[in-house]
Image 1 (cartoon, one colour):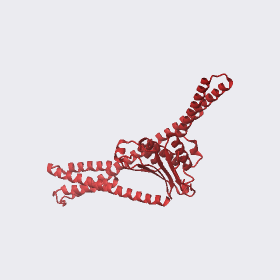
Image 2 (tube, rainbow, N blue to C red):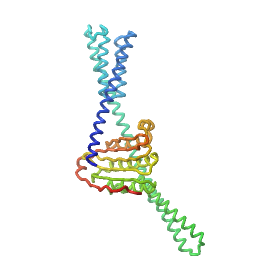
Image 3 (spheres, rainbow, N blue to C red):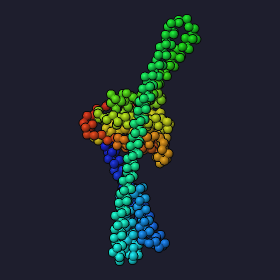
Image 4 (tube, rainbow, N blue to C red):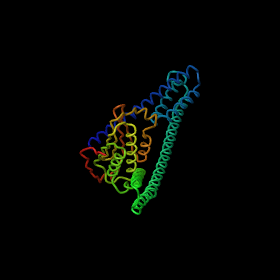
Length: 360
């Protein structure tokens, strides 16, 4: 599995690089087309050189705001060439006035500076948004822990005391009628079931096991409990997982597993799911897959549903990434990757994968 994971990782990196290249090329093409069209329009309307330069700057700013820094610099160079083309003598790339050379050079420098500043502002805005997301997730985790403690230490304890008192009533008063005894047993059983459900919910909100058990053990335990409660089968396997994983990475992967399984159970319309956790030389991988109805990726992105945004934001906080593979009637696979340091990689706990699916 580890060899296959490394091959998949290289393929994914190659696909990402190709995607970024073609996206940048498309941005440059669109910018060039827009500037060429604007040049023709300005010529037909007989705009002066200053007006044309201002319109070109606006195009460069729009490209810098929506695209990459490379595409905005390319747009600046194309704009400077178009400006040289429309400068006197028109449509020749030959400029008689030396001051026009100075003006075009100044335009090129200014447009590049503006493009760099716009890209920098956009990066700062993205960093600020990421910081806000980080604080929101931290606040959410603190609230989860508080609610889980209240449920476990207060509500569960009170339900336990109620069950003990009902047992005492049956012991103290042996003259209870048969119907009253049966009713008391039913209430006692129901209170115990409610207490068990509340304890399970508290562990889902925040599991203390995350602090002293390994990531694979916690995830395996969650899959067994989740499968029993929902009446589904989850085949969870792990292999080559680092023994020392930062707590924030463990928590992030655990939340991704929770979100992915909950969404799979809700939308896939099947009762069997697969989970995999494994480590490579520099990354930890987690996949959750099913053979259900699947979905259109574009539709899911535009709708912002299926919890993908929440998983993506969590993974950003630990420099992780998420990819989704799905087609209608062909199931879905959620693949999360989180980089790990070399120090973490030095110690690995190889966890034996079960030979058969875990029936729960």
